[in-house]
Image (cartoon, rainbow, N blue to C red; front, side, top):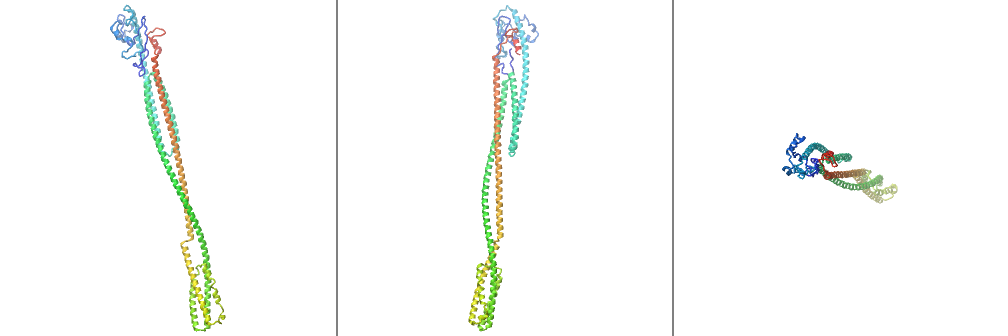
Length: 574
């Protein structure tokens, strides 16, 4: 027994080859030594006894099962060959015992019973020592198994705690992502906090990764010492596969979040385009309103000019009215003079009293003149406040000259004959009638013009027109101001929306970069873990293959020598 097979390790009884060992006996012949279990089946000769082993059950059982070399059971069982185990598995014993030639029939014959007894006693001693050594190795194996179970439970608890922490961190990250989507307006203030939290989480993940790597390194070293690298490597590979699946799920969730952000960005771009089109429409409306305001200002200017013209015409009409009033007064004075002259002519006609017919004619003429004069005076008094045109004033100015010529003293006309006087009177009456008709026509024209001016003033008051034009201008100016304010407000809204869009784009780019960096970090960590696991597997395979190649050859000899005995080498190795 050079080395005890460890449970669960790579050096199982079915895979590890038997390690040959040389057994040196006291005789000259050499052969493969039996194993301790095979030696237990050997039975010493009855005549020599068992020595100090007679009281132990193991010794009695071994004595009951042992047979002589010449017996049929010893030669046919092959238990001393060392090549096979009681269970039939190769390599159960890690060494090969060399049997003596005497046990195989190649040594001296039955003439040496004393040497055989000594050899059997020596083998019994070796068997007892091997049993004690096996018991000690079993106890040590049990202790190592308990340590392995303790370490495996600690490792599983630590892994479960790390997985719970990782799951909580993922849930926190998902909750923060949902909160960021709900609070899109407050992202500018929260993104720094999220970055800080992300950095802390990264540091925590890095710390936990380092701790886990250190723990895995310690566990791998322990597993290398306890020969359990293969089972632990498979378990770690499964755990890494689960973590890889979870990380893939997280990457898919992040990709979905990125797609949602892209759709939101596209919607914001559409809104920006709509606002830009609305701004263009408003600018076109503002340009149209500005043109309308300019047209209104032009109309206001023309209205103002027309108002100035109306004021000027009003002043001219007032001046003409004053002149017409003065001319009407002059016409009234001329009428009175004509009436006085008619009365004087009547008196002269009565004084002369030359002819009755002429007198009656003169009286009728005077009566008609009186009636005409009264009607003309009433018309002149009624039309005194009216206005006259410049043509009527010019026509009425030369009228007083005929009465002045007719106001001659009666003495000069007394020398004329009554027929001549009558003719002159008839001519004067005709002239007066013509003048009266002309004055009546002028008065009628003045009345019509005055009525027209009254209607014009009633329908179109200059002050009211001016007020109306001023109110229109004020309304146009107010509308232009309102439109300019609306344009400024729309431009400010457009600028704010553009800033928000740029901010959202920058935040999306930053989050995308962080996501890519996180994915790269996770891929690097996974790659490092896989490489370390692969290296551990390779080192475990190399360490498991090394003892097979360099296994020493042990011997059951207790005596000193360059090679040493089996028990001395075994104790020295332990």
